[in-house]
Length: 328
Image (cartoon, rainbow, N blue to C red; front, side):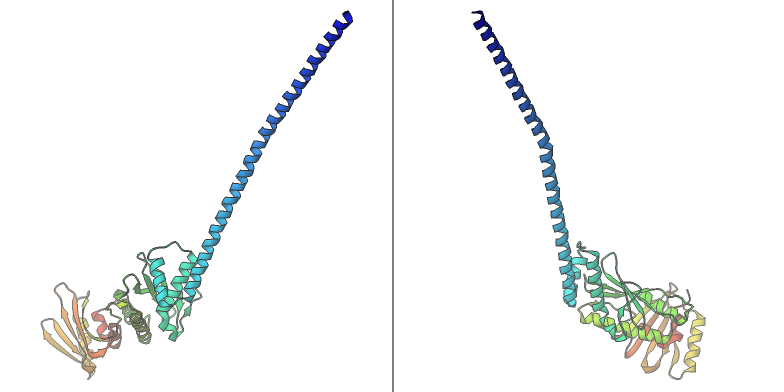
């Protein structure tokens, strides 16, 4: 009896020990599972974050590639474009300040400016070595740039006859594609005359060539559909123009004009009234000179039927230049 009780007691202890061991195993398994889940979660998050980063980089690279491809296509279209197409691109890209690459913008301005300067191929028009925005001819350099209103300005640099002089680019022509107008800076035309006559920087032959070349351009602009504003440079019609000189009518200037006309049988000098004088020139041309109340001098130039510019007129009759231009 005692033995049976002892056996049952031992069996109960064995069962308890077995249950305890099983519970320990279960607990350890659950702990390991929880640790595995905790370990797996950061790994999964890192994987998907890496995947998302790679996706964003691919999208960025595709966008860059598409922009580069679009830029290449634009530059290709510019290379194949004629003037009308370049003008259209200028209006749609430059005037609207479209976001295009620097290279594409430079390319458009280069091709467009070349088409505008095309008549100067007769005097060796080519890109200058000095900079991308400068054209070179036998007679001068031409620099082009966009102004604040996105018009295209052309400045001309003429080599001095004496290398001791240093000349600068002179802003002579403005092309305005938005309104299809071309403007000539008359102040710079007068400065050309001054540099020739008073400073002796340029020769008369140089100004004659400049006058001829620039009028080739003005005629070309008209053919392209631009409206060219009247200027001292235009030689398409006879002169019948009033000019106002900022200088007073000085007796010394009149005396020099009188002496020159008396020495040349083709010229004459007449007094028409109080402070009003008329100089008769060859080919029935004449200039009327009158003093104004504000101290300025009024000039009326009549070239009869001869087509010429004011620049050409004054370089042909240098003794009349002091009426309009003097030493600064």
